[in-house]
Length: 265
Image 1 (tube, rainbow, N blue to C red):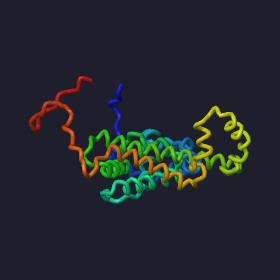
Image 2 (tube, rainbow, N blue to C red; image 1 turned 135 degrees about the vertical axis):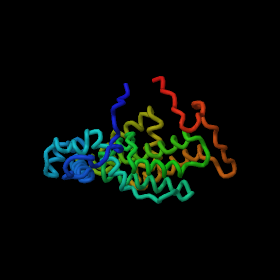
Image 3 (cartoon, helix red, strand yellow; image 1 turned 90 degrees about the horizontal axis):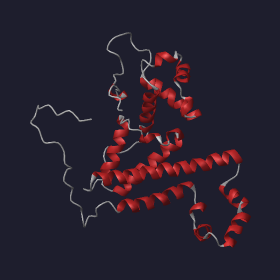
Image 4 (cartoon, one colour; image 1 turned 60 degrees about the vertical axis):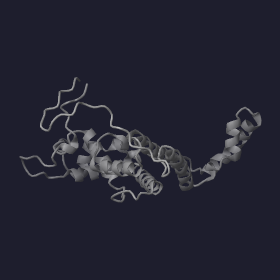
């Protein structure tokens, strides 16, 4: 059942209308939480740990941030604010998408704990700013669901690419082995697989694929270019623009000031 009593953190005032002047701000609490998460991971950014960081009691923080879920919303939006973008898209969607993907990748590499959290439906001001930029860059008159599909495709690719890169970094830190070292250690077994002839697609990957020999940057942009090729399939061309679809069926229009009917749910 829906929690009808829930109040979104972005609707709560920073400062209560009554009571003593706050000793801290949400921004201070959020900054402390982000510093801890960057150093030790998201789970380490507990209310108790943040309180110790800024020199207060854990329970006092709830006057500023009602719940841990609210805290994560603030953290996510604070980090998304690092993604500097123009006020509006340039009109060259490939250039805009490349810029957006690069900014998102850099942000995730700085804050690995953000992987997966960007999709939280908190709709903070910075998240809304990114949605507006990304969707406007891809809006050429096609249905909004196609725009969302393209935007989601892009974000999903960036997150997966960063996750793969971070896995490689973690593996290197754990073992001290480079990607080339790992390939060399497994060469005898890989040759055994190739000789068996049982895995023809894997054999093609080993013999012909070049991605595994690319740098992280090269591999990211190689994949991004293929993603944009897929996105282009649902973006109308200049020669054959798609008309905007009619709005979906909705409630019967009402006159100004008329009270809307209650939902059946």
